[in-house]
Length: 173
Image (cartoon, rainbow, N blue to C red; front, side):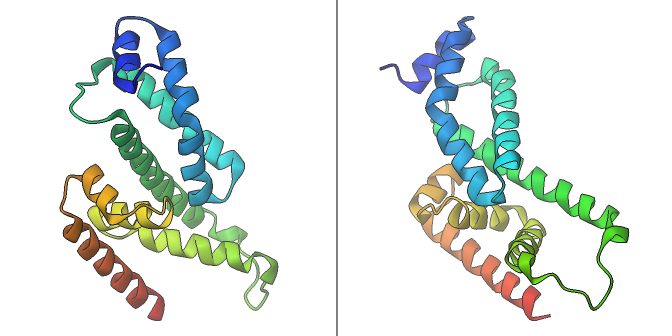
């Protein structure tokens, strides 16, 4: 079986079947990341598709300075941050469609809590947001987070700690 780097090199040389092989190999993990992140199959499919569309364009200039898996995960993080920003604005623009005050549909309470959490994560500083997203949505160990982000393992832990403290303070207010 060819390595990711071999497939990328073939793709850069014009073999689109090599890109298709990369997609087959990494789509389940990418889709799984977005399923954990959104809890919505359609949103997860759309986000995964968008990531691979961006990969199709970006891999033409891939410099082999990191593993493809790391490069792809960074793209997933960037896409998830864009998703959070986009949904934050979408929700602000549709405030007129909110239910009347006093009415509460408790059947969606878990979904609201999850959305409220991710909205709060979206306002964290970039590095903290990335660490929290990798820890919560992907359940990554600090060692792997540190490798992907190019920081020490201790720095990943500190960023996570500060993010959790900020989130706790946010929800206490």
